[in-house]
Length: 257
Image 1 (cartoon, rainbow, N blue to C red):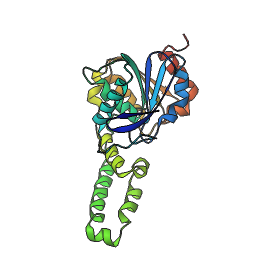
Image 2 (cartoon, rainbow, N blue to C red):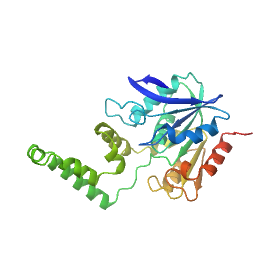
Image 3 (cartoon, rainbow, N blue to C red):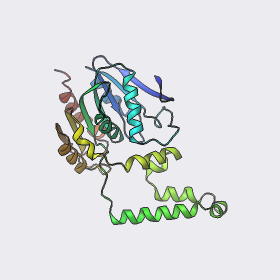
């Protein structure tokens, strides 16, 4: 299904009946990664999963969005369903959007429960090695962007980006690269204290993208939060340990009772 939000065609899916649960995917992913989870939750709830703008089958933003822009988009998207209360589940980047949404005053709906899965939002500590590498990258990019250099070596800048950038950065379009840079550099930890809804944190013990220490920090920062760490799971804990993950979620959402 498709709906137009903020001038963009957005792809989404709905299944089940009952109160509304919204599934928010991570960076570089799409709604299909939540298929198994949506089937489990739809036993009791109306489950809405979507492709964020710039991902899956949804249109890219026309401008360089930050987390606030995605938050505004999400509020408007939920508003279209005319629901008074919602449950929000977000993985990685989707968690960022939930954290910022939860901190907004005067929402047109109440957030009853939250599940953050290997969530982003904590600004990682930058090592000296990282800072040196980033400085070198910026200097190299500036040099390769010079008119004479670009003319003589037209592919040098793209090759340099591929060598120095992350897989998420390299696989993104130009506008999504700029959005990625803008979002990952925003620290959302000051907003954790504003989250009032009961919050379940689920983490993979081997997550290297958003380490367990991020989950522990969020557990301390959110008033009503509990952290579950899944053994043998990585950043995609809901895919690495689906049976354990689904059991935990069903318990938290009172499915099957």
